Length: 313
Length: 81
Image 1: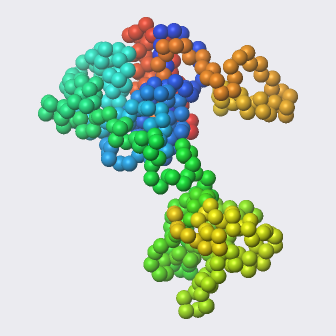
Image 2: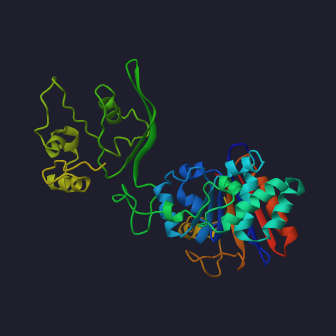
Image 3: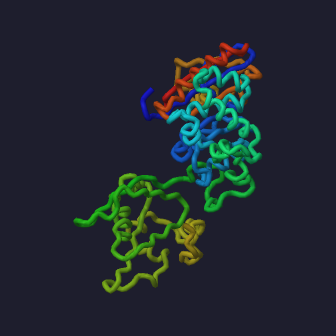
């Protein structure tokens, strides 16, 4: 196993012989995420694909207050997944197990599924010499069984930092899509992306952007706000001249750069976007009707005359 | 790449192009669940970080379950992504 890479372990057990020689792709009742960063870096559909309705998801997550990604919350809501979070690193430290979060996560697994009596399982797991850690774990797991009960013992109170059923707090209700999301297609991880890449931008000797993340969705209107001379127009020009590698090529996407120089050229604001577009010889070559262009612009927030109504992104 | 039921629709779609592939399917293809996992089987997935002990511990777990219960077990461990 390559150190530092993603590992996936698949376990099946049941009363009948198992002859399914394929990975678990459905009907998974117990999911454990031992590294919380995966929630943010991997697609929700990938993580929760196999989960069945009402499955259990245990997160090793110290910061529950951190907002989980919207697609993730939506999927958790759809699948009615019960989300538990445990700060395994802290528990491991306090129970004398050092960095071994896995002991805690395994204990939670045995407690949650009840495949063996927890007592027996922990004995087998850690041997007799881990008695101290085992006591603490048992107390901890007693709390895990009843997520809504406040822990009373002092030691356990310290240990159980965030061990409560959290699906209600973490998951947006189904009928109420998360904000910022009304325009994009529901239950889609990636609303038709135009480009998603990193940009490094320099102007002369000055570096304006270093590995900045550029993520643009189709059908949205974006505004670029920042102080003078920070590189807004330079970025737009770089996109227009296709210096941004991941941006769709000229053949796929037409860009127009409208500059209204301050104190240099007379402003072009008197023209509507339609007039501007048709003034461009390249655009005229496309041989489009005005009404066609106008109706194509409307879903993007332009009105009949081709003027921008209100920026939405 | 493992062959799963998800691939069957694609296979059917492209079967005209492929002379070599002949797949006989008795029943239940396309989007119907065609799981061969026996009823009552518990399935679990663990996402770990290489060298955090997840894989080793789960090997241990499945052995504990096999040796201390009457259950049938199966485990698979991958680094694929």
